[in-house]
Amino acid sequence: MAFNAVDTELRGPAFGRSEALFRLALAAFGLMGARLAGAVFSFLSQLILARSFAAADVGVVFLAMSVTTFVSLLMTCGYHTLALTYLARYRAFGRSRLVDAFLAVSRRDMVIAALLMLLASVIAYFFLPLSDHMAKALLFGCLAAVPLAALRLNNSSANAQRRFTLSYAPDFVARPLLLLIFVAGMVLAGVGRDVDYVLMALVAISFGVAIGQAAILGKDNVWPWTAPAVSRNLTRFLRHRAVAMLLVTVVAGASADLVVMLGGLFLPSSEVAVLGVAVRLAALIGFFSSASQPFVLRDLASARASGADTDRLLLRMNLAGLSIMGLAILACVLFGPAILRLYGVEYGAGYWPLLLFMVGQAFRTSGGMNGELLALGGHQVKSASLCFCAVLVLVTMATLLTPHWGIMGLATASVIAEAFWAAGLALLTQRLEGRRGDIVGLLMRRWASHSPGPAFRR
Image (cartoon, rainbow, N blue to C red; front, side):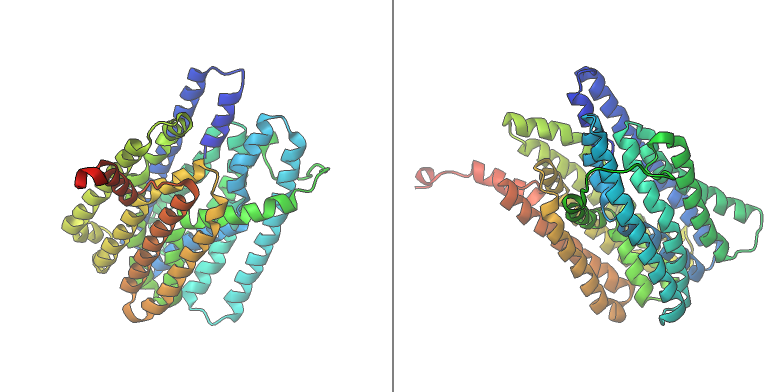
């Protein structure tokens, strides 16, 4: 999140290059450290929940968490991702009218989306033939999604103002830490193990963190009581770009939550708990395997600009990520049952799905640098149709396989969707950039460059 605004610093006359690079490093390491801390807090809170509540109740909480994450992304309409580029650019060049126009469009569309989704959740809760756990998770998840969507747009505003800590700490650190404190305190105090308390805490924490961030941002808060009048209407310019970025964000950052939500449609609550543990553990390992990729963006951009060979850098990143995934899969094969037993005996059923989810993460890691190449080439929007197709593949395969194979069907659907996404990303990168950044494409190009020519073969 912090990279776009820092790029504007590098163009500013007031900062030397060394100082700007130092700021970039601080922002990058701060973001990665925050995400790591948040992942640890989430892991601990989920572990306490699994050890202290019945699996059926844990499934409701996991489902509500996934609904919150996924629906909050839908409520943003993609503007929070688009803002990382546009707000930073407008503020860097002092275009305050464009900033106001951007925020006016994003606020209006987000409020409309939030109202529609809240209405849909209430209708679903009272009138659709949903299971009790699905209906409850959907209602509480949508309620918690409203402040989280507002927080996401404020994250981008803080980033554009170079207030980097406020752009990631509330979401990645404060929310999971507060949930961990609540769950641990609830268990230690011997409060009745009622899952409704946890669901209400999810909503309260989301509202509290969003309000706290807005208060600290002060004048930089994008949700004022009275918004300034705008002289330009950027709706037609921004809306289709925002929707395209929303599709990219869903595939890149919320596929695990979509899997859990699909599980809520087909599986009993106790199996959703097992599914949630398996898919979240795999996503955590996937995060570690690709965590170093953002740090090479500047080297990659410099190499592209100077015409230098980028293959060695790309190959090194691919090998590093896949090595981590390979070791993680091996560790899972050997110690997976013991790790899952930490959650409880019933979670041992997630062993084979966990392995499949990790294979899916390996596909994602192998194609990760293609995404970086598309981003550097400014082709993120053009990948939106591919993102939509990947989601469609996941939903279709899950609908076909889950009723017959249960959690294994969902895991198989996830692997198929990840393979489709990785292959499609490779083909799209080849078409738009003329070269690929995945391990297969790099090895094929290296083999071709070292193979003997026709004259030698004769």
